[in-house]
Amino acid sequence: MPNSRDFIRDYPDDNLECRYPAHSWAMPFVARETYDGRRVVVVQFSCRCGANRVDVLDRNGERISSHINYPPGYVVKGRGRIDRARFRAERVRRLEAGK
Figure 1 (cartoon, rainbow, N blue to C red):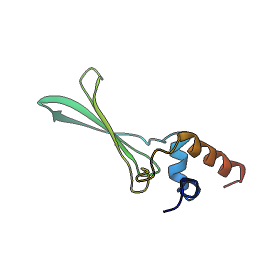
Figure 2 (cartoon, rainbow, N blue to C red; figure 1 turned 30 degrees about the vertical axis):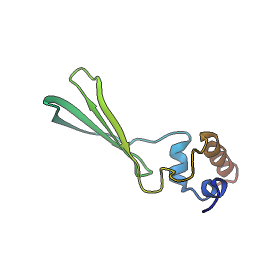
Figure 3 (tube, helix red, strand yellow; figure 1 turned 90 degrees about the vertical axis):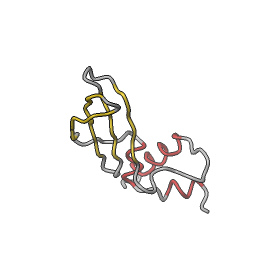
Figure 4 (cartoon, rainbow, N blue to C red; figure 1 turned 60 degrees about the vertical axis):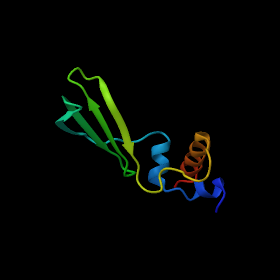
């Protein structure tokens, strides 16, 4: 298994851009649904990296539920915790290299 430095160097550009500065959520899709027996608004966002965010809001706009479904390869599993600073440093390295 490659070490975390090699892993980050091979990490896809779109995924890296979403780790720093942040996801770039597209215009959301909105639907009215029933959740736990009450009427809610479900707002779904998609990102360039393939992640999808789903927010469930009550009629007052309070968030009832929120989760993000990440694309394969985005979540780092089996490598322990990789500090976010490592992803930021790699993003900056690529920016400086003109990549």
